[in-house]
Length: 122
Image (cartoon, one colour):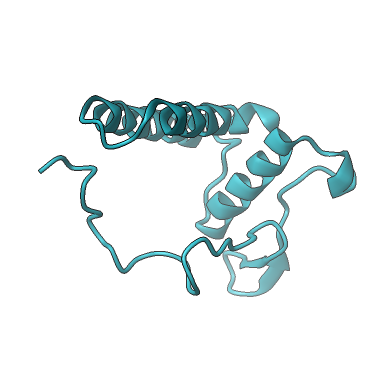
């Protein structure tokens, strides 16, 4: 069975019905001393002035900050890119196995390529 056919942890994921999106950019995170602080992710311009790529970068950075990491750290950004390369490899395998069609592949691969640019968009 291809590795893409069954998730490793099928119960992991956000709470709520499938498709639920958790916004990390408006959450607070814990500082190293245990007190709650506002997320530092995101430029100061209003959300309406940001591009979709900037919004994605802000959301991804907030996820990293939530785990005491940042995409502005070059080692973390490199590990992020390597991980996305692995995801693209799995997606390529899914296409080769005819588990995803060409249209779905182009859509998903485009999103992943957009994610690769998040460290530079911050």
